[in-house]
Image 1 (cartoon, rainbow, N blue to C red):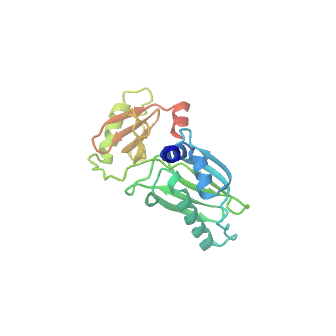
Image 2: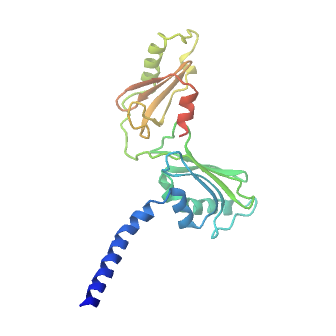
Length: 234
């Protein structure tokens, strides 16, 4: 009976340990999990919130660096690295569109349903041939849900101009055709969650930038300062 009691006790201890194991694994930082799972040898940093990998510099033991000038090897190498990065960045693979491929580096632009982000978020591969790879990740969590664009570019520009005329920055000689309005994904500053991105018309004017939600025309007018610009990169 004594041995049976010990057997049951040991079984309970084992079950208890097994139940807590996933929590212990999940408690590891993103960078620690990345190094553990990929075997990456080098420096790894996270974004300020610990949501994803921000930068890596080093080598993968199972991936040979491409030969200098061999674009096919370079392309294949980058694709293999993205597979390893995928669980640790915020953009799915189909949102990453290659923008450039050269011996000096490779860049991928994050695009959602054909639209880019205001700050040009994505992946940058640099210093690939110096016995290491340097990658900078700035992707953001943006939904693939289709957005009904109910506001035209002309409406956004005209609405912005009407308001801008009442500010101290108004310049009567500014021509409408000189205003570079764009439709892209931006941080939703009207939402308490600043990690939420929505499709917006961006109308930059001297002194202010006007953001109109492409779906409901909600306006967010921002007067930029240094803190705002720094916040964009967090």
